[in-house]
Amino acid sequence: TSVAILISGTGSNMQALIDHSTHNECLYQVKFVISNKPNAPGLLKAQSAGILTKVIDHKEFKTRELFDRQVDAALTINNIEIICLAGFMRLLSGWMVKKWRGQILNIHPSLLPLFKGIDAHKQALDAGVRISGCSVHFVVEEMDEGAIIEQGTVRVEPKDDITSLQEKIKLVEHKVFPKALDLVATGMASLHSICYVKLK
Ligand code: GRF
Image (tube, rainbow, N blue to C red; front, side, top):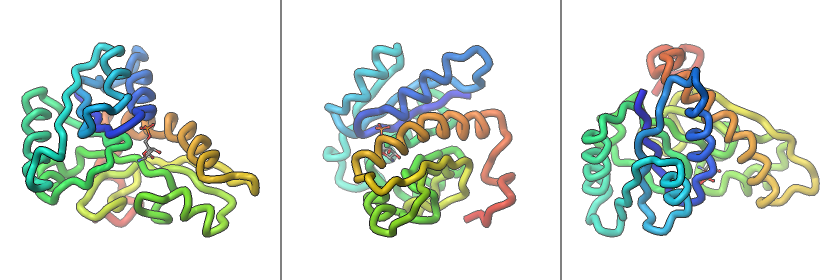
């Protein structure tokens, strides 16, 4: 299965997906990395792993859909089957989400459906939860909605702040994202067969 990863920043989850794909038994290959930020550090990491990269700067497009159409064209030319959003800080348009329905995965740093949105770690600390974690889910139009594929947990300690919680959750993310992608790449999870959750 050919996978593309969309990033905006560090790319530590991208790196975890790439590292996992180098195992012999892995059923997916990371073929392409796209960043909407020209200076995303993840671009260099992808290049060092020998993966084709492309910058598509969202600022050059008048609407979200025009940007997405450019991304879609690049993915299609490269025969991509699954898209992983790994710290990609743009909402996808309805057009894009419909076109790639069941083929886009996102990772979010909370135990969904709790704490959707950009400040998930702060929301978790403010709520005083003792357990948090991360979720990999299929992407639908609404932010951080869509069937959950896999989750991982961390304990929240009294001394934790946003930075320490981010670091702890990232360590779990790096295990959970490859596992979720494996499930989708092998056909063990799909939008139609995760029947223990209400599908959108
Ligand atoms: C992760 O915490 C992920 O959950 C969120 O953005 C962050 C990306 O980190 N969506 P990285 O670029 O993979 O290091």
